[in-house]
Image (cartoon, rainbow over all chains, first blue to last red; front, top):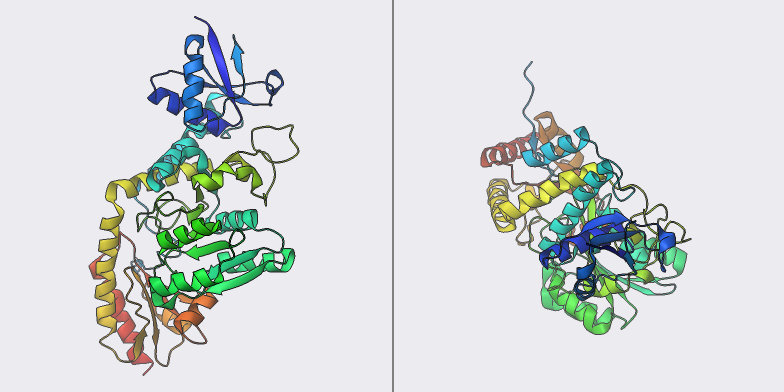
Length: 75
Length: 388
Protein backbone atom coordinates (compact mmCIF):
# COMPACT_ATOMS: atom_id res chain seq x y z
CA UNK A 1 0.00 0.00 0.00
CA UNK A 2 1.53 3.31 -1.11
CA UNK A 3 1.48 6.18 1.35
CA UNK A 4 0.96 9.77 0.26
CA UNK A 5 1.23 13.05 2.13
CA UNK A 6 -1.06 15.99 1.42
CA UNK A 7 0.79 19.10 2.54
CA UNK A 8 -0.85 21.98 4.42
CA UNK A 9 0.58 25.27 5.64
CA UNK A 10 0.11 25.04 9.38
CA UNK A 11 0.07 22.58 12.25
CA UNK A 12 -3.48 23.60 13.15
CA UNK A 13 -4.53 23.04 9.52
CA UNK A 14 -3.04 19.55 9.69
CA UNK A 15 -4.91 18.71 12.91
CA UNK A 16 -8.14 19.98 11.42
CA UNK A 17 -7.50 18.01 8.21
CA UNK A 18 -7.16 14.77 10.19
CA UNK A 19 -10.48 15.47 11.94
CA UNK A 20 -12.29 16.37 8.70
CA UNK A 21 -10.95 13.30 6.91
CA UNK A 22 -11.82 11.09 9.87
CA UNK A 23 -15.45 12.25 9.66
CA UNK A 24 -15.39 11.35 5.95
CA UNK A 25 -14.10 7.86 6.80
CA UNK A 26 -10.52 8.48 5.64
CA UNK A 27 -7.84 7.57 8.15
CA UNK A 28 -4.77 9.84 8.26
CA UNK A 29 -2.05 11.11 10.60
CA UNK A 30 -0.24 14.44 11.02
CA UNK A 31 3.37 14.51 9.82
CA UNK A 32 6.05 17.20 9.60
CA UNK A 33 7.22 17.92 6.08
CA UNK A 34 10.57 19.34 5.01
CA UNK A 35 9.45 22.63 3.42
CA UNK A 36 12.13 22.28 0.73
CA UNK A 37 10.19 19.30 -0.66
CA UNK A 38 7.12 21.40 -1.36
CA UNK A 39 6.32 24.11 -3.91
CA UNK A 40 4.82 26.55 -1.42
CA UNK A 41 6.93 25.84 1.63
CA UNK A 42 4.29 23.87 3.54
CA UNK A 43 5.67 22.50 6.79
CA UNK A 44 3.02 19.96 7.75
CA UNK A 45 0.93 17.33 6.11
CA UNK A 46 -1.46 14.45 6.55
CA UNK A 47 -0.29 11.00 5.60
CA UNK A 48 -2.77 8.54 4.14
CA UNK A 49 -3.32 5.71 1.69
CA UNK A 50 -2.53 7.02 -1.82
CA UNK A 51 -5.71 5.47 -3.22
CA UNK A 52 -7.65 7.95 -1.07
CA UNK A 53 -5.57 11.02 -1.87
CA UNK A 54 -7.80 12.52 -4.57
CA UNK A 55 -10.96 12.04 -2.55
CA UNK A 56 -9.20 13.44 0.51
CA UNK A 57 -8.03 16.51 -1.40
CA UNK A 58 -11.59 17.21 -2.54
CA UNK A 59 -12.95 16.68 0.96
CA UNK A 60 -10.43 19.08 2.46
CA UNK A 61 -11.01 21.70 -0.20
CA UNK A 62 -14.76 21.44 0.43
CA UNK A 63 -14.05 22.23 4.08
CA UNK A 64 -11.90 25.26 3.35
CA UNK A 65 -8.54 23.53 3.88
CA UNK A 66 -6.07 24.23 1.09
CA UNK A 67 -3.78 21.36 0.12
CA UNK A 68 -0.37 22.30 -1.30
CA UNK A 69 1.33 19.26 -2.80
CA UNK A 70 0.67 15.55 -2.88
CA UNK A 71 3.95 13.81 -2.01
CA UNK A 72 4.22 10.13 -2.79
CA UNK A 73 6.24 7.75 -0.64
CA UNK A 74 7.87 8.01 2.77
CA UNK A 75 9.09 11.26 4.24
CA UNK B 1 -7.69 33.09 65.58
CA UNK B 2 -9.93 31.40 63.06
CA UNK B 3 -9.52 32.38 59.46
CA UNK B 4 -12.42 34.27 57.88
CA UNK B 5 -14.23 32.46 55.11
CA UNK B 6 -13.74 34.20 51.78
CA UNK B 7 -16.92 35.39 50.13
CA UNK B 8 -15.72 36.04 46.60
CA UNK B 9 -17.96 38.49 44.74
CA UNK B 10 -15.61 39.77 42.04
CA UNK B 11 -16.35 37.32 39.26
CA UNK B 12 -16.49 40.07 36.63
CA UNK B 13 -12.74 40.54 37.23
CA UNK B 14 -11.93 36.84 37.31
CA UNK B 15 -14.03 33.88 38.37
CA UNK B 16 -13.33 31.91 41.52
CA UNK B 17 -13.49 29.14 42.49
CA UNK B 18 -12.92 27.13 39.33
CA UNK B 19 -14.65 23.83 38.63
CA UNK B 20 -12.65 20.84 39.92
CA UNK B 21 -12.16 19.61 36.35
CA UNK B 22 -10.24 22.81 35.51
CA UNK B 23 -7.89 22.40 38.47
CA UNK B 24 -7.30 18.74 37.57
CA UNK B 25 -6.66 19.52 33.90
CA UNK B 26 -4.00 22.13 34.70
CA UNK B 27 -2.35 19.90 37.29
CA UNK B 28 -2.30 16.93 34.87
CA UNK B 29 -0.86 19.07 32.08
CA UNK B 30 1.92 20.30 34.37
CA UNK B 31 2.76 16.78 35.52
CA UNK B 32 2.99 15.00 32.17
CA UNK B 33 5.50 15.61 29.36
CA UNK B 34 4.04 18.67 27.67
CA UNK B 35 6.28 19.88 24.85
CA UNK B 36 5.96 23.08 22.86
CA UNK B 37 2.73 22.80 20.85
CA UNK B 38 3.22 23.02 17.08
CA UNK B 39 6.99 23.20 17.42
CA UNK B 40 7.99 19.61 16.88
CA UNK B 41 6.76 16.18 15.90
CA UNK B 42 7.86 14.33 19.03
CA UNK B 43 5.28 12.83 21.35
CA UNK B 44 5.55 15.49 24.08
CA UNK B 45 4.90 18.27 21.57
CA UNK B 46 2.02 16.27 20.11
CA UNK B 47 0.46 15.86 23.58
CA UNK B 48 0.45 19.63 24.06
CA UNK B 49 -0.69 20.21 20.49
CA UNK B 50 -3.64 17.89 21.04
CA UNK B 51 -4.69 19.87 24.11
CA UNK B 52 -4.46 23.12 22.18
CA UNK B 53 -6.30 21.74 19.19
CA UNK B 54 -8.93 20.19 21.46
CA UNK B 55 -9.57 23.65 22.89
CA UNK B 56 -9.87 25.17 19.41
CA UNK B 57 -12.39 22.50 18.38
CA UNK B 58 -14.45 22.83 21.53
CA UNK B 59 -14.57 26.63 21.31
CA UNK B 60 -15.34 26.57 17.58
CA UNK B 61 -18.30 24.25 17.99
CA UNK B 62 -19.66 26.38 20.85
CA UNK B 63 -19.36 29.77 19.16
CA UNK B 64 -20.22 28.84 15.56
CA UNK B 65 -16.76 28.82 14.02
CA UNK B 66 -14.05 26.39 12.87
CA UNK B 67 -11.00 25.19 14.81
CA UNK B 68 -8.53 27.05 12.60
CA UNK B 69 -10.39 30.31 13.20
CA UNK B 70 -9.85 30.18 16.96
CA UNK B 71 -6.80 32.20 18.06
CA UNK B 72 -5.37 31.72 21.54
CA UNK B 73 -4.37 34.92 23.34
CA UNK B 74 -3.23 35.83 26.84
CA UNK B 75 -6.48 37.65 27.71
CA UNK B 76 -9.37 39.56 26.11
CA UNK B 77 -7.35 42.79 25.99
CA UNK B 78 -4.70 41.16 23.78
CA UNK B 79 -7.38 39.85 21.41
CA UNK B 80 -9.12 43.22 21.19
CA UNK B 81 -5.79 44.91 20.44
CA UNK B 82 -4.89 42.35 17.74
CA UNK B 83 -8.32 42.68 16.14
CA UNK B 84 -8.65 46.47 16.24
CA UNK B 85 -5.06 47.19 15.23
CA UNK B 86 -5.26 44.43 12.64
CA UNK B 87 -8.27 45.89 10.85
CA UNK B 88 -7.69 49.64 11.31
CA UNK B 89 -6.25 51.54 8.36
CA UNK B 90 -4.35 54.83 8.23
CA UNK B 91 -6.86 57.66 8.50
CA UNK B 92 -9.67 55.14 8.87
CA UNK B 93 -12.76 55.31 11.05
CA UNK B 94 -13.33 53.54 14.37
CA UNK B 95 -16.69 53.51 16.12
CA UNK B 96 -16.94 52.36 19.74
CA UNK B 97 -19.74 52.44 22.31
CA UNK B 98 -20.00 54.75 25.32
CA UNK B 99 -19.69 51.71 27.62
CA UNK B 100 -16.29 50.49 26.49
CA UNK B 101 -13.61 49.22 28.80
CA UNK B 102 -10.07 50.62 28.47
CA UNK B 103 -9.19 47.44 26.56
CA UNK B 104 -11.07 49.01 23.64
CA UNK B 105 -10.86 52.72 24.41
CA UNK B 106 -7.08 52.86 24.80
CA UNK B 107 -6.12 50.95 21.62
CA UNK B 108 -8.67 53.03 19.70
CA UNK B 109 -7.14 56.26 21.02
CA UNK B 110 -3.65 54.93 20.29
CA UNK B 111 -4.71 54.39 16.67
CA UNK B 112 -6.03 57.95 16.60
CA UNK B 113 -2.60 59.21 17.67
CA UNK B 114 -0.48 56.82 15.63
CA UNK B 115 -2.45 56.26 12.39
CA UNK B 116 -4.60 59.37 12.35
CA UNK B 117 -7.78 57.31 12.71
CA UNK B 118 -10.95 59.12 13.64
CA UNK B 119 -12.57 57.64 16.74
CA UNK B 120 -16.30 58.22 17.24
CA UNK B 121 -18.58 56.99 19.98
CA UNK B 122 -22.10 55.64 19.64
CA UNK B 123 -24.51 56.00 22.53
CA UNK B 124 -26.13 53.06 24.28
CA UNK B 125 -29.28 54.77 25.67
CA UNK B 126 -29.63 52.39 28.60
CA UNK B 127 -29.66 49.46 26.17
CA UNK B 128 -32.55 50.62 23.93
CA UNK B 129 -31.85 48.64 20.73
CA UNK B 130 -33.69 50.93 18.29
CA UNK B 131 -31.93 54.05 19.54
CA UNK B 132 -28.55 52.31 19.55
CA UNK B 133 -28.96 51.10 15.97
CA UNK B 134 -30.17 54.47 14.77
CA UNK B 135 -27.11 56.19 16.29
CA UNK B 136 -24.71 53.64 14.76
CA UNK B 137 -26.37 53.95 11.36
CA UNK B 138 -25.86 57.73 11.42
CA UNK B 139 -22.17 57.36 12.26
CA UNK B 140 -21.10 54.43 10.06
CA UNK B 141 -18.87 55.12 7.08
CA UNK B 142 -19.62 52.35 4.55
CA UNK B 143 -16.62 50.13 3.70
CA UNK B 144 -14.42 52.03 6.17
CA UNK B 145 -15.60 51.87 9.79
CA UNK B 146 -14.35 49.28 12.23
CA UNK B 147 -17.07 48.94 14.88
CA UNK B 148 -16.12 47.65 18.32
CA UNK B 149 -18.87 46.94 20.79
CA UNK B 150 -19.00 45.47 24.23
CA UNK B 151 -21.72 42.79 24.47
CA UNK B 152 -22.54 43.23 28.16
CA UNK B 153 -21.08 46.13 30.18
CA UNK B 154 -18.56 45.29 32.89
CA UNK B 155 -20.15 47.75 35.34
CA UNK B 156 -23.85 47.21 34.82
CA UNK B 157 -26.10 44.84 32.95
CA UNK B 158 -26.74 46.86 29.81
CA UNK B 159 -26.65 44.45 26.89
CA UNK B 160 -26.05 45.56 23.33
CA UNK B 161 -28.00 44.08 20.39
CA UNK B 162 -24.94 42.53 18.76
CA UNK B 163 -26.91 40.53 16.18
CA UNK B 164 -28.57 43.66 14.82
CA UNK B 165 -25.33 45.66 14.95
CA UNK B 166 -23.61 42.81 13.10
CA UNK B 167 -26.19 42.94 10.32
CA UNK B 168 -25.82 46.70 10.04
CA UNK B 169 -22.04 46.37 9.77
CA UNK B 170 -22.18 43.51 7.25
CA UNK B 171 -24.62 45.42 5.02
CA UNK B 172 -22.34 48.47 5.13
CA UNK B 173 -19.16 46.49 4.40
CA UNK B 174 -17.72 47.33 7.83
CA UNK B 175 -15.78 45.12 10.24
CA UNK B 176 -17.45 44.21 13.55
CA UNK B 177 -15.50 43.26 16.68
CA UNK B 178 -17.30 42.20 19.86
CA UNK B 179 -15.93 42.29 23.40
CA UNK B 180 -17.57 39.33 25.12
CA UNK B 181 -15.57 39.66 28.35
CA UNK B 182 -18.71 39.69 30.52
CA UNK B 183 -21.00 37.58 28.35
CA UNK B 184 -18.99 34.52 27.26
CA UNK B 185 -20.13 31.67 29.47
CA UNK B 186 -23.27 33.60 30.47
CA UNK B 187 -25.03 34.08 27.12
CA UNK B 188 -25.15 31.95 24.00
CA UNK B 189 -23.18 33.67 21.23
CA UNK B 190 -22.78 32.49 17.63
CA UNK B 191 -20.44 34.38 15.30
CA UNK B 192 -22.35 33.16 12.21
CA UNK B 193 -25.83 34.14 13.40
CA UNK B 194 -24.65 37.47 14.76
CA UNK B 195 -22.37 38.27 11.82
CA UNK B 196 -19.42 38.92 14.07
CA UNK B 197 -16.01 39.27 12.44
CA UNK B 198 -14.04 38.75 15.64
CA UNK B 199 -15.38 37.75 19.04
CA UNK B 200 -12.85 38.41 21.81
CA UNK B 201 -13.09 36.98 25.31
CA UNK B 202 -11.03 36.11 28.35
CA UNK B 203 -10.64 32.49 29.35
CA UNK B 204 -10.54 33.21 33.07
CA UNK B 205 -13.93 34.87 33.66
CA UNK B 206 -17.19 33.29 32.48
CA UNK B 207 -15.40 30.35 30.87
CA UNK B 208 -13.81 29.44 34.24
CA UNK B 209 -10.32 28.80 32.83
CA UNK B 210 -7.01 29.93 34.34
CA UNK B 211 -5.72 33.49 34.16
CA UNK B 212 -3.41 34.12 31.20
CA UNK B 213 -5.88 32.66 28.73
CA UNK B 214 -8.04 34.40 26.15
CA UNK B 215 -9.62 33.71 22.79
CA UNK B 216 -10.42 35.35 19.48
CA UNK B 217 -13.09 33.57 17.46
CA UNK B 218 -13.22 34.63 13.83
CA UNK B 219 -16.22 34.62 11.56
CA UNK B 220 -15.80 33.14 8.09
CA UNK B 221 -15.67 36.42 6.14
CA UNK B 222 -12.86 37.96 8.21
CA UNK B 223 -10.88 34.69 8.29
CA UNK B 224 -11.01 34.47 4.49
CA UNK B 225 -9.01 37.70 4.35
CA UNK B 226 -6.69 36.84 7.22
CA UNK B 227 -3.56 37.78 5.27
CA UNK B 228 -4.82 41.39 5.27
CA UNK B 229 -4.94 41.57 9.06
CA UNK B 230 -1.95 43.63 10.21
CA UNK B 231 0.04 41.79 12.87
CA UNK B 232 0.97 43.59 16.07
CA UNK B 233 3.31 40.91 17.42
CA UNK B 234 5.70 38.92 15.25
CA UNK B 235 7.87 35.93 16.07
CA UNK B 236 8.09 32.19 15.87
CA UNK B 237 4.98 30.40 14.65
CA UNK B 238 6.17 26.85 14.02
CA UNK B 239 5.29 27.27 10.35
CA UNK B 240 6.87 28.88 7.27
CA UNK B 241 10.02 29.69 9.22
CA UNK B 242 11.95 30.97 6.20
CA UNK B 243 9.34 33.64 5.52
CA UNK B 244 10.14 37.20 6.71
CA UNK B 245 6.59 37.81 7.96
CA UNK B 246 4.00 35.90 9.92
CA UNK B 247 2.07 33.12 8.10
CA UNK B 248 -0.96 34.30 6.11
CA UNK B 249 -3.32 31.76 7.63
CA UNK B 250 -5.10 31.76 10.96
CA UNK B 251 -4.58 30.97 13.73
CA UNK B 252 -0.78 31.04 13.36
CA UNK B 253 -0.82 34.54 11.86
CA UNK B 254 -1.79 35.97 15.25
CA UNK B 255 -0.01 33.50 17.52
CA UNK B 256 3.64 34.55 17.68
CA UNK B 257 5.64 32.75 20.34
CA UNK B 258 4.91 29.80 22.58
CA UNK B 259 1.29 29.29 23.52
CA UNK B 260 0.07 28.85 27.08
CA UNK B 261 -0.64 25.14 26.56
CA UNK B 262 -1.06 24.42 30.28
CA UNK B 263 -3.62 27.20 30.43
CA UNK B 264 -5.26 25.85 27.29
CA UNK B 265 -5.70 22.46 28.95
CA UNK B 266 -7.46 24.18 31.86
CA UNK B 267 -9.55 26.38 29.61
CA UNK B 268 -10.67 23.37 27.60
CA UNK B 269 -11.97 21.85 30.84
CA UNK B 270 -13.71 25.16 31.61
CA UNK B 271 -15.41 25.35 28.23
CA UNK B 272 -16.54 21.74 28.53
CA UNK B 273 -17.92 22.53 31.97
CA UNK B 274 -19.88 25.47 30.52
CA UNK B 275 -21.30 23.25 27.78
CA UNK B 276 -22.36 20.64 30.33
CA UNK B 277 -23.85 23.14 32.78
CA UNK B 278 -25.42 25.44 30.20
CA UNK B 279 -25.36 29.23 30.00
CA UNK B 280 -29.07 29.53 30.78
CA UNK B 281 -28.71 27.65 34.05
CA UNK B 282 -25.65 29.66 35.03
CA UNK B 283 -27.33 32.98 34.20
CA UNK B 284 -30.53 32.03 36.03
CA UNK B 285 -28.62 31.13 39.21
CA UNK B 286 -26.59 34.35 39.12
CA UNK B 287 -29.71 36.40 38.48
CA UNK B 288 -31.39 34.87 41.52
CA UNK B 289 -28.40 35.99 43.60
CA UNK B 290 -28.56 39.46 42.04
CA UNK B 291 -32.24 39.85 42.95
CA UNK B 292 -31.64 38.76 46.53
CA UNK B 293 -28.70 41.15 46.97
CA UNK B 294 -30.40 44.15 45.33
CA UNK B 295 -33.60 43.46 47.27
CA UNK B 296 -31.73 43.79 50.58
CA UNK B 297 -29.73 46.86 49.50
CA UNK B 298 -32.89 48.66 48.44
CA UNK B 299 -34.24 48.55 51.99
CA UNK B 300 -31.69 51.28 52.83
CA UNK B 301 -32.39 54.67 51.29
CA UNK B 302 -28.76 55.71 51.82
CA UNK B 303 -27.66 53.15 49.24
CA UNK B 304 -27.89 54.02 45.54
CA UNK B 305 -28.12 50.99 43.28
CA UNK B 306 -27.45 51.85 39.64
CA UNK B 307 -30.15 49.47 38.54
CA UNK B 308 -30.27 49.33 34.75
CA UNK B 309 -32.92 46.64 34.52
CA UNK B 310 -30.73 44.47 32.30
CA UNK B 311 -30.71 40.69 32.56
CA UNK B 312 -27.20 40.24 34.02
CA UNK B 313 -25.80 39.74 37.51
CA UNK B 314 -23.54 42.71 38.19
CA UNK B 315 -24.58 45.13 40.95
CA UNK B 316 -23.14 48.65 40.99
CA UNK B 317 -23.85 50.79 44.05
CA UNK B 318 -22.69 53.58 46.34
CA UNK B 319 -23.27 54.23 50.03
CA UNK B 320 -24.06 57.81 51.00
CA UNK B 321 -21.22 59.39 52.99
CA UNK B 322 -18.70 56.63 52.21
CA UNK B 323 -16.30 56.42 49.30
CA UNK B 324 -16.36 53.19 47.25
CA UNK B 325 -12.87 52.41 48.58
CA UNK B 326 -14.07 52.77 52.19
CA UNK B 327 -16.99 50.41 51.52
CA UNK B 328 -14.73 47.90 49.76
CA UNK B 329 -12.18 48.07 52.59
CA UNK B 330 -14.84 47.48 55.24
CA UNK B 331 -16.24 44.50 53.35
CA UNK B 332 -12.77 43.04 52.84
CA UNK B 333 -12.24 43.03 56.61
CA UNK B 334 -15.20 40.64 56.73
CA UNK B 335 -13.70 38.45 54.00
CA UNK B 336 -15.97 39.83 51.28
CA UNK B 337 -14.14 40.52 47.99
CA UNK B 338 -15.66 43.23 45.79
CA UNK B 339 -14.20 45.72 43.31
CA UNK B 340 -14.29 49.49 43.76
CA UNK B 341 -13.46 52.57 41.67
CA UNK B 342 -13.84 52.88 37.92
CA UNK B 343 -13.32 49.24 36.88
CA UNK B 344 -11.06 50.28 33.96
CA UNK B 345 -14.12 51.81 32.30
CA UNK B 346 -14.26 55.55 33.07
CA UNK B 347 -16.40 56.32 30.02
CA UNK B 348 -18.93 53.72 31.10
CA UNK B 349 -19.03 55.24 34.59
CA UNK B 350 -19.74 58.67 33.08
CA UNK B 351 -22.49 57.10 30.96
CA UNK B 352 -24.09 55.47 33.99
CA UNK B 353 -23.47 58.59 36.14
CA UNK B 354 -21.79 57.15 39.20
CA UNK B 355 -19.76 60.11 40.49
CA UNK B 356 -16.21 61.28 41.10
CA UNK B 357 -14.94 58.14 42.86
CA UNK B 358 -16.76 55.56 40.78
CA UNK B 359 -18.74 52.92 42.65
CA UNK B 360 -18.68 49.52 44.32
CA UNK B 361 -19.19 46.55 42.02
CA UNK B 362 -20.41 43.14 43.15
CA UNK B 363 -20.42 40.36 40.56
CA UNK B 364 -21.72 36.87 41.18
CA UNK B 365 -20.55 33.51 39.91
CA UNK B 366 -22.11 30.09 39.59
CA UNK B 367 -20.50 28.89 42.84
CA UNK B 368 -21.85 31.70 45.02
CA UNK B 369 -24.68 30.79 47.35
CA UNK B 370 -27.73 32.65 48.65
CA UNK B 371 -26.35 32.57 52.19
CA UNK B 372 -23.11 34.25 51.04
CA UNK B 373 -25.12 36.88 49.22
CA UNK B 374 -27.35 37.58 52.22
CA UNK B 375 -24.30 37.85 54.47
CA UNK B 376 -22.61 40.30 52.08
CA UNK B 377 -25.75 42.42 51.67
CA UNK B 378 -26.26 42.63 55.45
CA UNK B 379 -22.64 43.73 55.82
CA UNK B 380 -23.23 46.52 53.29
CA UNK B 381 -26.19 47.69 55.41
CA UNK B 382 -23.90 47.67 58.46
CA UNK B 383 -21.32 49.78 56.63
CA UNK B 384 -24.08 52.20 55.68
CA UNK B 385 -25.07 52.55 59.36
CA UNK B 386 -21.43 53.24 60.34
CA UNK B 387 -21.15 56.08 57.81
CA UNK B 388 -24.49 57.66 58.77
